[in-house]
Structure formats: C-alpha cells, structure tokens
Image (tube, rainbow, N blue to C red; front, side, top):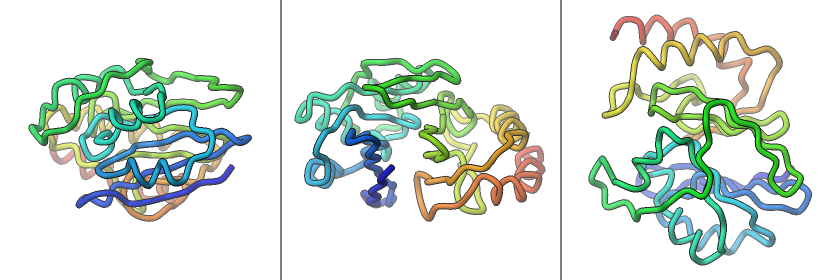
Length: 201
C-alpha cells in the first residue's frame, strides 16, 4: 500500500490517495483538491468519503466529472453533499453508493471496510484498508472530533468511543487533520475523552 497525503484548504484537511495493487482510491477530497489528485493518480478507482462535512467533500463533484469516478459516502451524511446544510457554498455531489453502517466493500478486487462511528456527524465513519484506518474526524492524534456541530451527537460520540475502545488489534491511523497515530495509542486516552463527552450530555 502506498499513501500520498496533502492537506487542503484553510482547514488543512488531509486528502489521501491510497494505492493498492496499482489502483488509486481518493479519500476525502477537500477544498481545491482536484489538481493535486489528478497530478498524483494513474489508475483512479473511486472517491471515498469518511463523512459529509464540506472540508472533506468539496472536490467530490469536480473529480467525479473529470475522472468519471463513483462516490462512496455514509448514507446518513448524504444530505450534507446534496443540501449544503452549513451554508458554505459546497459544490453539490451525488453519491453512487450509500454506505450503510459497518459495510464491507470489494472494489476491483481490493477489500475496503467502513466502520461506522457516529457522533461528529450521523454517518461519520473510518475507512479500513488492510491494517490502516483513515479515521476522518473521529480520531486524531491525542484528540477526537467535535460533537457540538449541527447534526452532531454527544450520545452517539460516547457510544462510538466505547465501541472503538473494545476493538482488538492495532491499526495505523491517518486522520482528517494532523499527523498519523495508532489505534493502540489513542485507546490509552479514550477513557479521558469518554469522561469529557459524558460531562456534556
């Protein structure tokens, strides 16, 4: 697996190009991501969204048009792609596949698993490829995603953290913002974040 990373836009949202067996998967193409993606792919297969916030999906529509790619997005976040609920002027895009819950996919022979961890958004998910998690805005290095946005849920975030804390094995985490980390490292501080979330609900 080869992973290319480029922070995009004013929120420095990490856009990833993940290459497996010569196939390129584009994860969270944010603001102004199109040119970088086109310059760095050779065999693009799909656009994968971890969730629907504008800084992660801004270039969906343009890349879909230019590269003729399908978009995969968690079902519960599709309204963010089609309706621009935060009023950011996000170019509207329409997913070709609605990902439901913890859904396993096989795209051109490559196994990809979505793990649903709502809270930051209703559909918020990580994308698992091999032993790597692209964790979107669920887990960061020594931090977690905010749960105070419109459509966020502290109750759901609490359940998601408790679910993640029980997962065995280790994964390398590539988050939506900032530096990479590991699941084991973040599990050590999850009890702190669980108490922080509990204090707000």
